Image 1 (cartoon, rainbow, N blue to C red):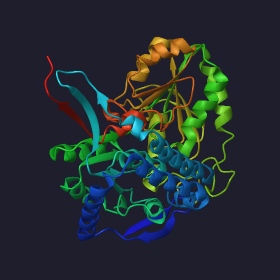
Image 2: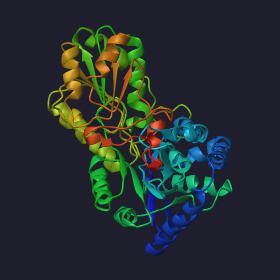
Image 3: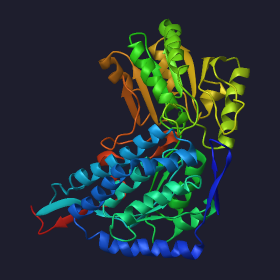
Image 4: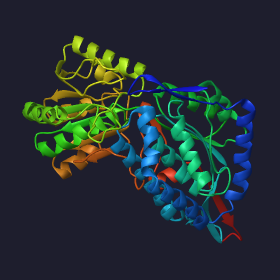
Length: 456
């Protein structure tokens, strides 16, 4: 059984059953059998299914948002927004998948030669807890529209969310077994990856777990996409709009209580504007309300688990011991649940722990750089390469973007995921891409077709 702990109270919420090996085998076989029919469906027929599911999400926002708030502590207003974003993802691929996967004619010595994009079969999605609906649809919407079927192994801390997602497909009356929930314990995931009916794996989570998933998939000669952690830089240069930068960076750092891979984690500010920017950032952060995530006025809910909260506290304490200064927060509050306050650290250098490890919580870390060149050097001095932002004059920002070692760079804006644009990392932040036209191409057979006779 999964035992779910409410992070707001620290008390057990409920228990959910696990799949037995026989039940897992049945579900995977059912996914394969469903694929045999689903792959024959037209793009319009597949799109009709996703549009139906998206409509149900939009009609049931409050009901679907609540499991996120209860199971992992997402503030209710953010949970509602996540449900709507997941619906948008389904709608986007319903509208654009046929265009993204259209056959491409390529000249050769054939009478006609082209590439077409065909489904692979059942795809396994191994998903984390921090954005249960969005990450599920980021995985399943393109995979389903490409003609694959989906097996969702969600995080054990959000089984209610997983049931709700799978239930949407059942309630919508879509073809049976195209999207199934696999409530597995972590040790059982290897058997699912190795199952001969599973053709590919999508994983979002930590670098350590991603390495294990990738190695298992590779040993079975199966493609995988990994979206792993980040220590994302936000570079603020002297010619930046400091007010706009402070607004965006504060928001980026505290969405979902800072539990986001693409949050601004290392804020690198040019020396001449450092102090003024820190004042603006502090002003915004200290206004945020920490509290019960079910309350509309709450900006910061609890950290999802006690061990994660304790790790944040360790990272902050060790960074302070190394010489950083704490302007806000920095101490575990004396209250029930797994709360950690919005924290602002300055005087940080890139060798301190808060820069060397991913900080998955509402901890804003500010570093000082002498100039743009040093800011760029600091930004790239990390084992991660997920996302980054730069605040400066537009053309200069675009030039700097080319020098930043990350899969996604935003100039004068907030880093976010968008179904229209590809997302993913380099280095220890993973490989492959999700979303946009690139994401749907990850789990297809890019098949070359040569039609004779040969031409001279």
